[in-house]
Image (cartoon, rainbow, N blue to C red; front, side, top):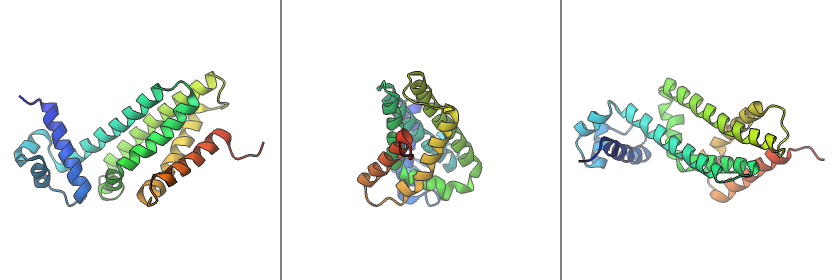
Length: 195
C-alpha cells in the first residue's frame, strides 16, 4: 500500500510541473490530476484547493533549499566559506525555483497574507543562519563586527534586493550571476574603503 506521504509528494511534484508550465491562474485541479494520472477526487482527498497545493509546493521547495544550504554550511569550518556558501547556494536555489518565485511575486500576490507570512518566516530563518555564521566568525576572531544581528539583516536585505535583477531578468546565464555574487562577496568581506 502506498503511504499518504508518497501520494502527497507525487501530487506536489505533478502540481509543480503544471504550475511551472501554465502559471497559477491558468492551472486547474483537473490539470494537476491529469499530470498525476489520477482522478480529481484523489487530489481533493489530500488537499482542499489549488491554493493549498501551491502553498505546499512553495513550502516544500524552500525547505529543500534551506536544507541544502544548511548541509553545505555544516560541511565547512571556516565562517568565510560558510558565508560564501550561503550567498551562492541561496541565489542558485532561487534561480532553480525562478518560475515558482515569479508566480509568488506576480500571480499569487492576491493572496497577500500567505505571501507576507511566508516572506517573514523565510527572512527570519535566513537572518538566523547568517547571524550564526557571523557569530562564529567573531568568536574565532575572523570577522570584526559590533552587531552581528544588524549585519545579518543588512546581508539578507541586500540579497533580496538582488533577486529580481539576478533571477527574473537574467539572460546571460550563470557566468554573470557568479560575477555579481563574487562582487557582492568582495564588498561583504573587504568593504569599499581603501586601506
